[in-house]
Amino acid sequence: PSVEFGLEAPFSIEYHDAVGSTNDRARELAADGAADVAVLADEQTGGRGRLEREWAAPSGGVWVSVVTRPAITPAQAPLLTLAASVATATAAREAGVDARIKWPNDVVVPVGDDGDYRKLAGILTEMEGQTDRVDWLVVGIGLNANLDADALPEGATSVRDEAGDVDRRRFVQRLLEEFERYRTDLDAVVPAWRELALTIGQRVRVDRPSGEVVGEAVDVTESGALVIETDDGRVTVAAGDCEHLRPV
Ligand code: BT5
Image (cartoon, rainbow, N blue to C red; front, top):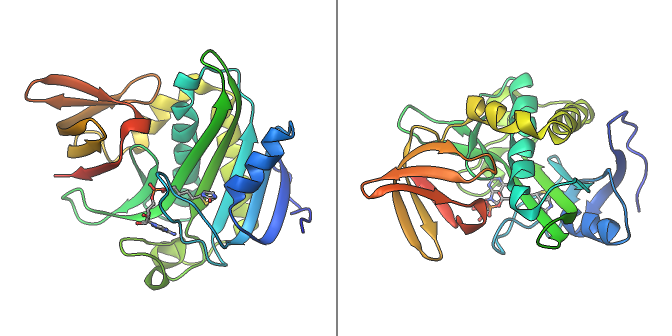
């Protein structure tokens, strides 16, 4: 079902007109030993978000999953999610969209000045590994490109609605180039992330399995966890513990 996508991207591309989930296909490739492959689809029939949530992925979006085998520990894996969000926001900004990053895995467009936003893209990172080293990571990026936001879930926006349609080949090329740049220079991820973050400086509520945290989001750690200043002192929340984050 796959054909070459005709890009000079830093990853080889496996393209599908339609697939269940590009993350699932990328996981199969990873389990077979692949590296530096990006699975790209025009449409996903079973797109997935975090925590078993559904991801709407009709024809016209950018649905892509990258297989990578970085020399990192599992604790550093969230950095690759931040890297993907920086790459996605950068490519969207080049397309004329006021894209910002909402911790831990969303690319959003601000609405007004009170911390409100619409969701343009989301990242789903999955991995296999031991306690001291990652075997492989699949970084899935879903971006509403040439789609009407009306036809997407509540609270979504699209590149079409914000700035007009894009050439998706060129967009994917830029996205993967930026991802490659940060993947190969992990020390550059957090500084670049801070520049684009909407969350830092906001008063937020984070829901975790162990209870909620309310306070001002002040920074991320070097492994991508969010530092929140609460009435009782600083609390650090790992991305994997965040069920929901909302400005309050
Ligand atoms: C995410 O989950 O934001 C991660 C989405 C990752 C999608 C990519 S597409 C390529 C790869 N293959 C996959 O199967 N997945 C990845 P989460 O933070 O859990 O947000 C999910 C929530 O976003 C849903 O519960 C909806 O409320 C909302 N949502 C669903 N589809 C959306 C869309 N297209 N645009 C904006 N919001 C959406």
